[in-house]
Image (cartoon, rainbow, N blue to C red; front, side):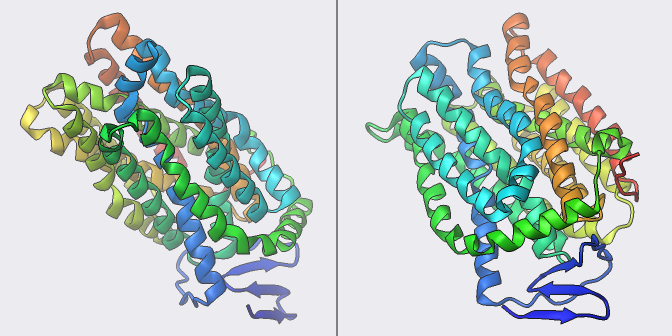
Amino acid sequence: MNILLNFKNFKIIYGGSIATMGIPHTTSRLEQPKLNINPKIGLLIIGIILIGANLRAPLTSVGPLVASIRDSLGISNTLAGTITTVPLLAFAFLSPFAPKLARRFGMEFTLFISLILLTIGIGIRSFGGIETLFAGTILIGLSIAIGNVLLPSLIKHNFAQKIGMMTGIYAVSMNLCGAIGSGISIPISSVSGLGWTGALGCWGILSLLTIFIWLPQLRNRHRSTKSQQTVQKVESINLWRSRLAWNVTLFMGFQSFIFYTVITWMPEILEQKGLNTHDAGWMLSLMQLAVLPITFLVPILAGRLQDQRLLVVIPAVLLIGGLFGILYGNTLLIPLWIIMVGIGVGFVFSLAMMFFSLRTQSTNEAAELSGMAQSFGYLLSAVGPVLFGGLHDITHSWTIPLLMLVLVSIFIFIAGMGAGKNEYVTSK
């Protein structure tokens, strides 16, 4: 990989990444240079795609199986909801520390260790007991938290002038595998002798493959660590005092609140509306498949705009309309309502991922903002599946829980209007 030293501007250009000599680099959003792909950069892109694929599927595959897990283990709806909530609590706990781990050990090595933990967690979760179910789920949550936080920073570091495109690529990978996970869970569990444990355990194959593909990136450990430490010495930030950072955090948190609630309970809601188990599972897949073009196009569009507030209006309308449709609309139009919710959630997620880069001026700031947003944001979203299931247990109806999601959609709009402003986070 060629390294070009430009002593006049004191810049180091390494493949697709640009780092100044201790000075955070700000890239114009209008710059669209060609991305020269060599074998090493190509392998990095494949690794990013595979890591993205591991960030959703181990979790989305749980939703269609909640009823089977609940009946098999003899647990309540509220406790069943915590199967999805536990990873979110793990996200909230570890996310603030992920940037510090990356500065200490390097982003590439930290991601490598997280993949190993993910594989171990998937294996433990598949043993079939209550204790192993939650122990494995905790490990899965901790490992995915690292990938959630570090991937946007890794992209900003290595593809500073192609942030929108690379964000779109890994977001598509994440949502595609998430959709596949929801769709094939029931068919796999129906195979003789596998059950829900086999349906959840099969994702260890994907994480194991990713480990081997990511191995070459460990050679970049020293360089990445040194770069992060250099930036840290130049700039000390406290994003917890930034109103803009809080808007990004709430925008991310409310989106996750809706997404993880929907993937946990939507199959059961649809079953009570007359769909069979297999069709309900595939509706969840349809929701995530519908969002694939959006998750690719939105980051590119957002990267070309100076102000993203207009983009915030679209998902808010889709979410509110889709949720009201599921609640009060014609049953024959359920696929339409599901698609609207899916596009709305994916739209917000893509914007949130872009805000980590667009609202910051350096790789260090991007990692810190990502850590903050995914820590507090996932803590907020962790309430969703449990509260939703608890409200259903109390009211014996899905009406109040779904109206709660409508209210959260309004909160997304309010936070998004603040996060979409053409500003940078500060420590003031």
